Image (tube, rainbow, N blue to C red; front, side):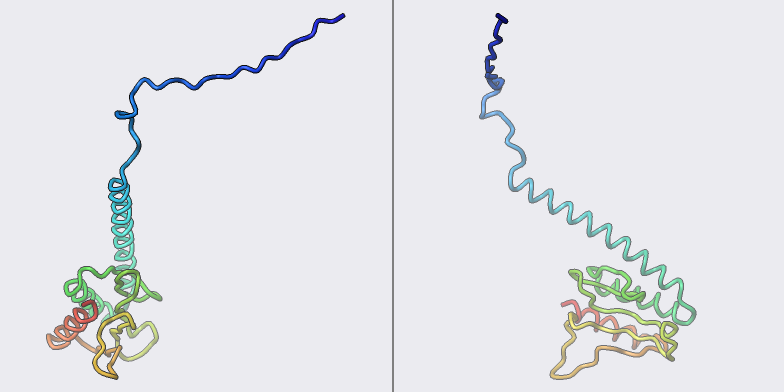
Length: 159
């Protein structure tokens, strides 16, 4: 007769902790988690803004004169008037966004072979004036008058 093998079930006990539960780390607090999420959002926003501005400046650099000179000046006016707007390109045009929405943009004359550049505002811009108002402005040159008008419109658009 062959010997029979008995199988025994071994039960392992979990290792005991050597620290008390009062001193054990329970992970990040809700406030720390919220702060970490906020910092991640900040870093992503900063990276997106840098990439958007790089694309915008490259789009301006590809323009022919006088479009390029006017686009550079419009870019300077918009970023000075509303530094919280994020620059990017929109359909290949310089554009400026707030909370992911395009607020205003610049269209160079060469893009569609027209005789003037335009600065336009989206429906997210707060330039409403009564029951009817313009949302695009033709530009053939920039004088102090046009610069003041653009600055005023951009400030109004982001209020």
